[in-house]
Image (cartoon, rainbow, N blue to C red):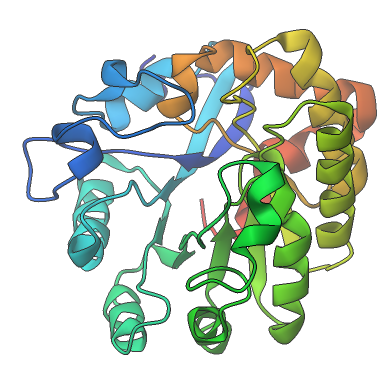
Length: 311
């Protein structure tokens, strides 16, 4: 879709979580160019190609006007996190997207502060997504407790304090069985703004698994500085089904409230299981069933607040 020809009457939209990469450029993405890695959605060869703003714009369905977007770090070679931020900043300057960038930083390392300060030179830099070490399955979570780079590793968690000092945000991405651990860790940084990724990743859809997700979501929602992205409900163990995922979106909206939920596509990753238009329609249905008056808030206004956007 040619964004320049969209009607001003169209619904405004900000996509608060997506990825771009140029596999022929200066940024190296090992997981996209080398041997495939274990991936929670399985075979991802379809996205092992250059993906740039024009393709995201083309995914936005008729009736919507893409005001802006938030780019999330795309697992570039870790020594290149500053290079990725610089590339994204230049891409935005030429193409108009993204409107903000969430980078990466080496939590627990001496150079973390310097890496953050280097990225702060970019007008797009808003925060960091640094993933703690997590258990691959819920029954293994207790065995991970206290290991290096987990949510109990005090040295790794010093990275959160560095974000708090710089008024940057943390994009939190952990599977549901670590949500309570994250809530506990955040007690030490009460002023840190946190954006929970991918609806809290409720991968375990058993009755007990969903209860663990629900309890963790409530614990995080008790912190007024935490919001959640309505995105990516793919699971490594369950098929993607609309009838299963709609109730989870409705619950997330109810738990966090209409001012702390952000629309996000996880483009292009979610496209392995659901189209951009179908995902957006599902989020719209969840809004209609819970807080129909909050459509603008969820689809674009909340992203402006949580990521400090001027679009």
